[in-house]
Amino acid sequence: MLYAGGRSDYAGGVSDSRPPLPDGLVAIVKRDCPTCVLVAPVLVDLAGRTALTVYTQDDPTFPEEVASLDDSDLSVSYHHDIEAVPTLLRVEGGREVERTVGWHRGDWEALTGQASLGPDLPEWRPGCGSRSVDPDLVPKLRARFESGTLRARRVALAPLEDEIEATYQRGWSDGLPLVPPTEERVLAMLAGTPRKPDEIVAVVPPDLVECSVEKIAINAVMAGCTPEYLPVVLACVEAACTDTFNMHGLLATTMPTAPVIVVNGPIRRRIGMNSGMNVFGQGNRANATIGRALQLVVRNVGGGRPGEVDRATFGNPGKLGFCFAEDEEGSPWTPLSTDLGARAGVDTVTLFPGEAPRSIVDQLARDPESLARTFAANLRTLHHPKLILAFDVLLAIGPEHARVFREAGWSKAQLVERLHALLQIPGAELVRGAGGMAEGVPEAMKDATLPKFRPGGILVVYCGGGAGLFSAMIGGWVTGEMGSQPVLQEIRP
Amino acid sequence: MSDVHDEPRVLLDPTGERELATRPRLPRLESLEGRTVGLLDISKARGDLFLDRLEVHLRDRGANVKRYRKPTFTKPAPRDLRQQIAVECDAMVEALAD
Image (cartoon, rainbow over all chains, first blue to last red; front, side, top):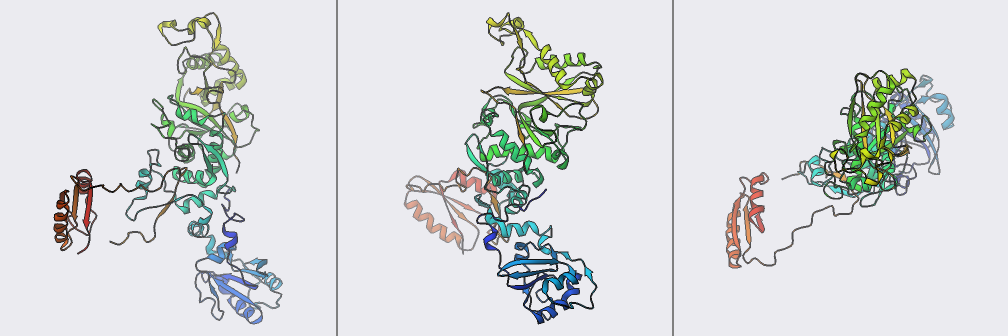
């Protein structure tokens, strides 16, 4: 859904600068409209009977015999929300009190209080689209009339400066080309939310900068988002900038982790997200740009850049943006969002502090216990087979693996419970030096049985293409209050 | 040279706006003594006469002078020339008009 974006009663916006309308009857027409041409004699007739002002959108000499006013810059039409021509208004004390659109004799006679209008005309003809709502013109009109609602600093380019190179030179890019954030594009982006451009969404680390809807829209433009994605990006920024998610720590860590975004709810389909084949890969605009927009907000608004506060030893390709949807329709189970407490059918993002996905292959899996053991054996190795409790995991189960559990009647809870049980590990295998490896837990734990994951530390999501007996695991970063924990955030318009 | 764009192109700053949008100029030289000043002739008529006189004055003040010349005044200086001047000089004077 698209919204007017920063219009209406926005302080300092257009409401105070709307061109006033003269009292009496006001008609808005264009020559390039057969219905307007049809009613031209009626306008001439009305002008002789009462106070009538005619605004013409394309040709000030139209209609002949009426002294019409030039609205070819569409200022009057735009600000008074003229959607079709002819539009006939009745104005009293500078305020519009009645409106009719197109030609309908009864309506025109009722509005004007005049009888016998256009006796030779047909009873009714629909109007044509107003030039002020022409999709090709709207971005320019928005920029012309509404850029005053935008607070961001303006960066003027030199005459010979290439605009994409300019975004690189100013340090805004993650390495890939950016869409230059012009006023037109940012205003169009803001139509993706009813929120005011100056509403503060979050305080973004590491510089702890208050971040407005407008700043997020600017970065969403640069990332390549469409306006329909903006609410998802807003939710991602809200979730990332919570104490629970701890974006600062996740950014600053030497580990190769970054926000991994899972989208649930009907919005996945509305914005065309991929939850199937190549779900973590390239090729889907929403998947590719929503995660990128969040990373650009952290980079540009928060000031979080690699080599500065971002101290990652390796990083991972997902730090350009890692966002995907769950295949809720194909899943045998509840979606991730409801596992974390959301109501079914609510649009959400879940942010998980994750590394790059790793493949789990088991092509012989036919019974659930065997496949659970495959999962457990792989999960055991997360970050190190002898490190425990420090990291959560997001386990992405593909359709062919999920079918094994579906056919055996295993619920998701049953699978997760079994995985926790299979990942109870004798301390003797985990202590420092065991297996000839120095890494491990303190010697004092050797007689204990220790779990690989904390309770709730195995999250399951269903996605991926229909062919391949594969799943994937996305390892987490340090969990708990000292680190980062998954955050569920409802997507609001 | 006329602008290739009719209107100035403006982008919206995506940053937290904690830093200046424009790069500050380099500080002025305290003295010309021992510094290298480049003189750029843009290939317009009689620019060389002006620069010849300037060179005399600059040398009198202890500056080293290097002379450069654009192939044509109708086009921006080639990238290599700009790079060379930036590397070799502490200051630069360009003779613009004829």
